[in-house]
Image (tube, rainbow, N blue to C red):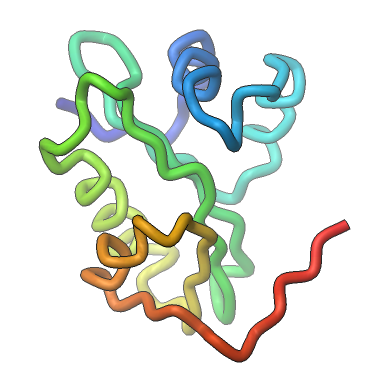
Length: 129
């Protein structure tokens, strides 16, 4: 297993990960390439020369960091890869002193993220356009 911070050579693997998830399955390869270029940080886990887990972060490196697309290939789940991704994000040299990390997740994932100090914020309203 190897942690990578650039997934350009694994773009087809990333597209395969995205095609299997409800929140990413309509993304085009062209859009994903542009997204990667404009993400502050990219984190991947590679096994046997294949990308099996991925996440990305947008951040000002001081006050806020937003974690997006925490995703693990379906046949590699429940073996700790998402935990490894999160630990690498939260302990990254340029992110470890950021004051606030935020992310979106489904209700059933709250317990997982609480293990990293995240808590559900009841009084916020999500606005979307």
